[in-house]
Amino acid sequence: MKRSKSLSAADANVLIDQSKQEMIAIKNRVEKDRARQETELHKRLSELKNKRLSDLEKEHARELQEYDRKCQEMQTDGPIGE
Image (cartoon, rainbow, N blue to C red; front, side, top):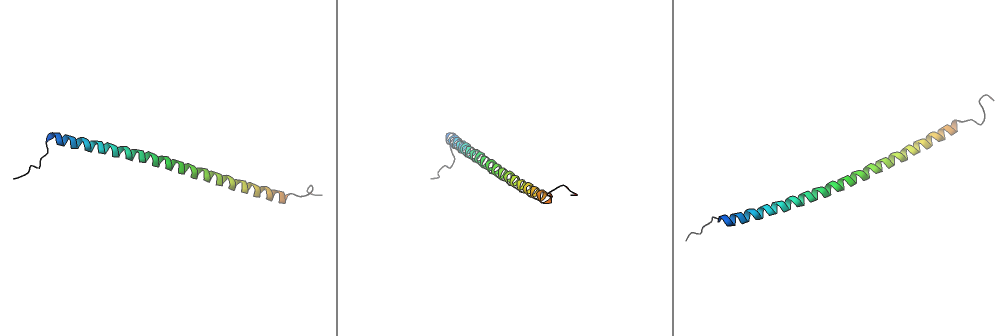
């Protein structure tokens, strides 16, 4: 005897519906993961930006201190010409 390998229309519809549900679930997982990654990336970039700004602020403060120190070294005790 030969066994039939064809699906009935009802079985095909069930399989199609199951596949659609699986695809929707995968799509939702991917979107959720993408949103999480975007949030983590934004957080990381914000941290790097804040660190860079802090480093620049410290560098500028050091430069200003050095400038003030050099200006004080150049000053004389009394008026010029005395």
